Amino acid sequence: MIVRIVFHIDLDAFYAAVETLQDPSLAGKPLIIGGDPRRRGVVASANYAARAFGVRSAMTTARALRRCPQAVVIPPRHSLYRQVSARVMALLGEYSPVMEQSSIDEAFLDMTGQLPAPAAAPETARQLQQEIQTRLGLSASVGIGSNKLIAKMAGKADKPGGVTCVAPGAEAEFLAPMPVRALGGIGPKTAQKLAEIGVKTIGDIARLPEEDLSRMLGANGLLIWQFAHGLDARPVQTRRRARSISREITFAHDVYDAALPAETLKKMSRKLAHRLQKRDLTARTVTLKLRYDDFSTVTRSITQATATNSPADIDRRARFLLAKYRNQARPIRLIGLSVSRFVKGVFQPPLF
Image 1 (tube, one colour):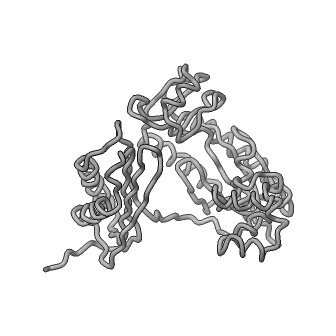
Image 2 (cartoon, rainbow, N blue to C red):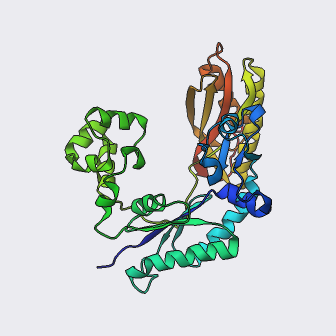
Image 3 (cartoon, rainbow, N blue to C red):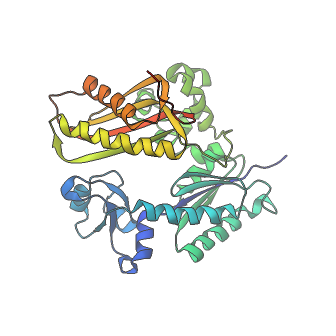
């Protein structure tokens, strides 16, 4: 029987680590990568010195600075991070031809058949960590498991710089004490439903009959039941197609008038159309995202039979959604626009 071996590589505090490589004087200082606190910027990443003060991603930069006033704040440089990420992924590809990049700082490697023996997995992971450190100056945590779910959960178990290996057959035992929110597919509402019947850990989920969980959570119930038992049949895929292309902006001040959101959507439409055209794609669905001053968020979509990569078409559909779903009495904090349901090929406008 072939033992499947999957590595999950998670670069530690990636954005902050890249910035420290650029400026070694930042080493040891609390560092926040985020937007301008005066313009309601948010934290994209923080190093572990800042996290010790309770700084977290997606927190407003102003709030992060209240928790850690001595932190250095640097605006994100995404093009730089993508360049460094590409170098990391190229290195990972030297270890296995089956590599799936799941985000800018995370990837899976299918190491099945790439090791002299399954027992060599931890030592190979440490060798990989050392190469990432020596060649690129970055720290990484590695999780090892029999599938993607277990490898990713293991990779989060000992950060930064840890190697955690879950032996085949020990998956359910490894997951059992973790809170239900740690499991993929469980959000706040599902967690609340489970809490109402006394289910607080992944082990509690595993003890439920599969039929009861499916009846309570619908189609997602079976998948959650399988995950709770450490089962995951998803393959490591070498190519990952984007399902959507999006842009969003947080305004410096709450916006009441109609002109600024509409003008912002027009600019976003042009940029999204350009990205579609570069990839020789068209899109059938346009989605508008509005976040109001109280952080409540509305997301609405329009899907049409005709796919497009025309900036005027995307803008027209976006403005339709804005006019139909915007609450004029409430100020807007954030606006976002995305396109999805891609069709390959160049858009041909109708003749009439």
